[in-house]
Amino acid sequence: MIDLVRQISILTWKDILLDIRRKENFLSMFLFSLLTLIIFHFSIGDNPKTFRLIVPGLIWVVFLLAGILGLSKSFIQEMENGCIKALLLTPMDRGNLFLGKMLGTTLFLSLVQFITVPMFILFSGISLAHEWWMLILVMLTGTLGFTSLGTLLAGMTATLRGREVLLPILLFPLITPNLISTVKITSYIFFGGEWNEVLSWWKLLLAFDVILGVVSYLSFEFVVEE
Image 1: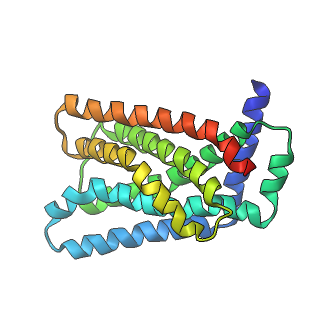
Image 2: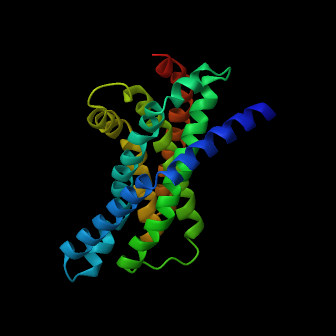
């Protein structure tokens, strides 16, 4: 158990260090999120209520598109320096490699979210009193589902031609239940609603995350061997 935690921690920290040293990953995702926010804010016009209504969906669409930028580079940067071959030669379970890369991507994307989401809230004028904990929880849960499936598909398409196009084509349809659930829960956090209805979305999101995590973990070994 100690070796398992140690291996996953090393792999996670390795990916974080790579993203820190190669600042273009973070900068491209942050600038994309900021630019999208500014464009939508000014395109809506002088009616703040209209912009406020689309913020829950806008947050997750921007995150989805920005996350693609990070996922597409997670395996490519290791293939360029031969790191992925060295990792596959180590006597380590392939599932640990999946968990390390997934957690590293999750932490990286969560950092982008925690910087950009407050900007969306500030621009829209939404007031959050005691709902911050639920917003953080849904951001983390939604991100875990996205990175679980995204890490698997990024590894699957890393060696293929046109991988920049194939990754979103494969990812977008499969991640739709996760995306809809997070948008519905975020809308409840911002504007309120019926708790029974949002509870059903929470159940769908958690069930979807568990299924994605298990399937991706078990399938990753066959993907990297190919």
